[in-house]
Image (cartoon, rainbow, N blue to C red; front, side, top):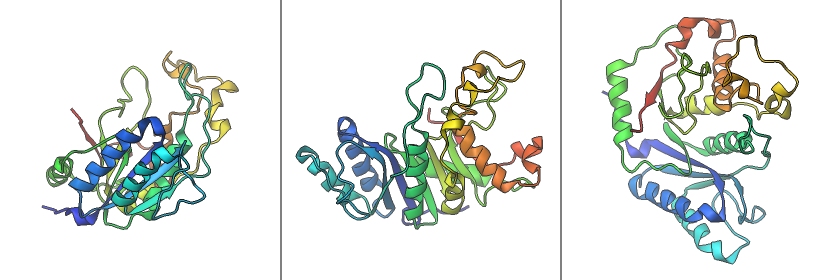
Length: 266
């Protein structure tokens, strides 16, 4: 039986930081600090409409709006480190009739936040998601103890937990393999850093089906994409491709033993 103490965990909370959502984000951040008082907390910001990026740094957040000074003080009190994104830009929708895609904001803020983490284990999570206790860690330990085995195509040093919500079954209505939910990861820091160490997506990638035909036999749901593949697929295809450079990634047996643990939020 493994033991995972709070002091061995970094929590990377990342995403957009806008005035309209600031109270929700403040409540989530302060709750993580109260629940995980011994853990390291990294607050990683992808974009904002009130943060003064010229004055802000890894230890202190500043606003150019007076009404958001209180929010910045709370972040400075609750977060051990603060990360910022500077390269990401919005893209056209990933599927038809959807809002603009902010894939690079997610990738850059996750990557930059993980770069500042220093503990053995890490919870990487969106800034609109709150775990109200340690029960998910207890479930992780249980699943590891009861089910984990290493195989020839195991891609990580230790299991990585993901949510079942928005993790898609590739044999269902839309055949979208490796669409693992991006809502959170929990596992060894070295593994989760590797998962998110991917290049930013490009405009060509996001508008791929503007100049390419869909494969013959594609279903209606599969023809709805503007982008080459879903962003969730892009993250994990990139990760597994690094791990299996000699063709192992193509083998069906490799799909079954990646040591990624789906975790139901229900």
